[in-house]
Picture: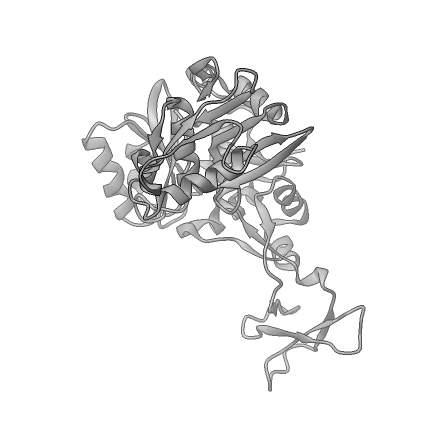
Length: 375
């Protein structure tokens, strides 16, 4: 069941200017439709936020931002939405805890969805802008060219055109995924960036809503070159057998079997808090954990090198004030202590002081370990 394209356009237009759609279910259902909101929650594009302190006016009065206050003495409706003092727009409304639950759009999950739908490889960065309201998604093959992929959430005016023209002038193959067209989008976008080295793809033309969430429309399949690229090189795996590039299917098989490893680290994705997922086997249990991106990069580098090195020599920790503490935190998340100063897979080679200590990833031959890295 595909839902009306207008629902997808409504969501995409809410992203305009890197806005963050969200609110209580009453407001979201009114803007997007209940089925759409259900699908967005199921696909984790909408995640739970804080309890609302304001509740929408039942008459749609924009001048009536109703404040949420305690409703003492009513356990079934412990809160009350009240209009501003002196306003006669509406009556106070008793509310349940569930009615005040808010939902916030997750750009991290949206980037992961686009990566899956358009065979985008690498690690997306939805925190740091490369241009106003523009974020790096990684790389993908589009129309036969390997390109940098961006999410552009504000195409209004001439500034975005200048950004695209600059990349065009430098000969940088680019695909920019944009939201929906509006009357403020320059006609140059469609006129000059439909084909060529720099291409703009409007997501309103490509996406629809289904029960499972956002998906590509029927009739908009990946071209053969994109499928081949996605199959040939999705990410890099490092294990006891060495380093190799793998396709998406093998990547997903490894992730699905993470609990079968004694030491598992996937640096290609992050959770909602921006941390890297990892795990370790302790006895019969697989213990899931997480670490920062810097810590994971440093430990992954150590795992691939498999030689003694100081913490400060790790590229990811060059600018860290106490690199030893960062590497120790990564070791605690991934390795298992077997003695007072001994660990199962990581050996500490003592030097003159903590800064001179060297870390050596030296797993036993029967230890199953793997690290997944972006290309």
